[in-house]
Length: 367
Image (cartoon, rainbow, N blue to C red; front, top):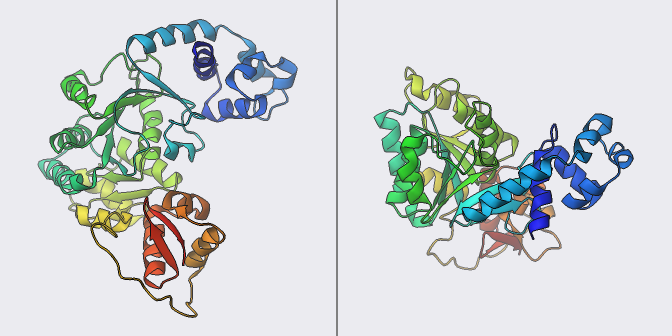
């Protein structure tokens, strides 16, 4: 166990080797340990590695730092999640540049059925804070995990509201788990460990440098079903997160604001550019994500319509379902390359037409 973890951590410490190249090394060599045991001549033949990067791989100076990190992990009850491990967040496995290794401290189930990310400006107005608090109050019944970045403004508002309504909430950090930034949020972060958690891909002793935050944002965008932007200026970290979520083919939602409000300019632009769906309440979110479709209701059997005319997207989903007993909505999104909101709407139409039927766990099959 110790040796395996040492090689996994060391893989992330190789100079000039990011997450994509690290995964490629493992794919070609077979395991993290095999990467370090491979001959330089063989490493040079791996696409993207070449002579320069192969030299970085065979330099084993990273092992000492990896062993230090293992001691920190063991002392502080931290779980290391490798991208090939069964407990690694499955939603992130669909993202090409997802972290090779995550460091996690907490109790929240990172593969829970419903996870959303809430982001926004650090200079939140009272309007934005009330929107955030009301949204979380209204979705509390759905047992959602709320993810955010522990920053000032909307982030900390989302974490506090989740705690108030007994929801699990996870903060993704732009530094190691040996500190909390900003330190003023230390008390809230400690409460989160009781039913939520702290998550990062940075080793201990990493300070919250400016360039770390966009890298942190890819975890916020990738670990959830949807990213919700509540107030954003024309530029800012929340817009970076929204763009990353769009690149991952994830749903993005934004609350609109007044056209002369600088704190709503970013949200309004996301909506105007079709980079986010406009929502006005939790009901909109629940409907689009399909959370309330079958909640507490028993639907009467529906007669399948004869000669149903399918749209191109509907036919795409039907073809994915053919020959399978059932397919989860996440896998349908992955196979069809359509966002969750569109797939949910298409499935609802197909279900009403009697073409598909739903199963527990947000799975679907052909009638």
